[in-house]
Image 1 (tube, protein in one colour):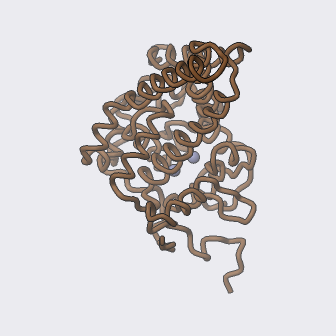
Image 2 (cartoon, rainbow, N blue to C red):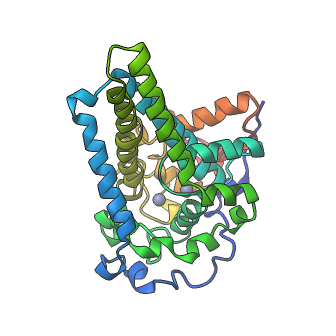
Length: 326
Ligand SMILES: [Zn+2]
Ligand SMILES: [Zn+2]
């Protein structure tokens, strides 16, 4: 069984970012400090990749490439890649260490995270820690204070995104050989998944169902990889943009413009309770009031029941201002 901890550190500021005490974004100061669109700084590899992925996702709407099995697989891999990989692992485990898990299971979760096509764990965690450290300030990598579109997508299209500083903010991960390997080969799980989905779909269509094997194989890839990835890209990006723009604040003292946004909290597996998170960055739970349903925290609690999560940080009662503390 797990132990719920009222860790004072859960109410502290953003997690430590080792070696990130130098002036922010020294590699590309002009772009980052002002948050401006800069044609000379555009990362065309990322842009072409995004265009390709959105184009591939559009194929899901060709009637002959729709299958109910493809739709089900899209939901299954949304849960595996985004809920388990990004929310449980990249965010609440690696970025904030809000609970503990066995090392072997951490690697399994990182493998899941690589399926979200958001890169390896080191860069993601480093960028996210910089977001907490400079939240809604000049050096926040993605704040709507620099424009809603900038926070949603444009920041990601600039080269500084690959700067050295975000790796410096995640040096604790770089010390782990297994995480370094998965960070270097973050593309591998996705390639394996695409090959496996196409092969299994082809076999299913050829020998089990009445449909064409090629048709089913392509259907599974465009629904469970392309469309699923694009949809959850935008849901993730809305956490950066919408959850610093609209919604309510349980914590006026969070020191930034983060908000709780119910319509985003549901599809983002609980990440939309973002003001709660900024105010309590090391809390494993982001939904804190009774109506703030947090799917990711529910999953972490279920993992704790089978021994795969322990020492779950949650804010103490005095950090829940809507509760009477007398
Ligand atoms: Zn935020
Ligand atoms: Zn965070």
